[in-house]
Length: 243
Image 1: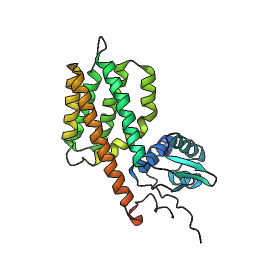
Image 2: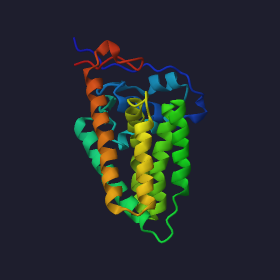
Image 3: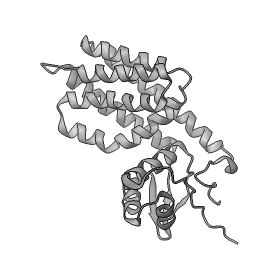
Image 4: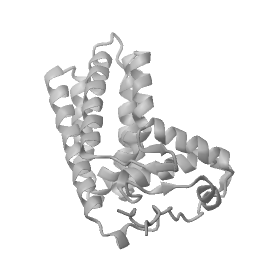
């Protein structure tokens, strides 16, 4: 007898005012982290009930996640695709290409302004001192986003904005692995900003490559742990899908 792919279970712990935004963010994070396994069936009605929203925001959320390549629509509904190792490598390769261009453009503008990046670096420092991984990840992502604004290249910024939510979810996963001590990651950002201010092209590109490669390796490690997780350890978001 064929078993149906499982639906996920989600605690209704967030006010409905955020509607589809919260649904999308929550699902994206759990898919990227592997807590919602590939093959899981996402049923609109069930998600609507669990999140306390109407089906409209849920449907919009699933469309957004499909555009990001995290879920796929089949004849019988929407199913989680998740991230493969190839997906992870592609995303980090894309980020390297985008950010390298953004940094070089920003660094060589006539009036380069690093004030926003310095402010966000201060937020990262404070979050690291508190051991606040979520606040650190948020400031970390905005720190890198500041480079795209400084670059003055609208379309480059638009491409980053398209993938930014996925990178945000990945950043939460990788920073969580550094939760005991966020200072090494913080030090990477301090060195990068110092090299930018000094307009040291070689140092900037080397530091960026090393930083992103470290993040890629941590994400691959997290992916391996998620794949190895037994079905009963899949978490509160559902059982492993049927084979």
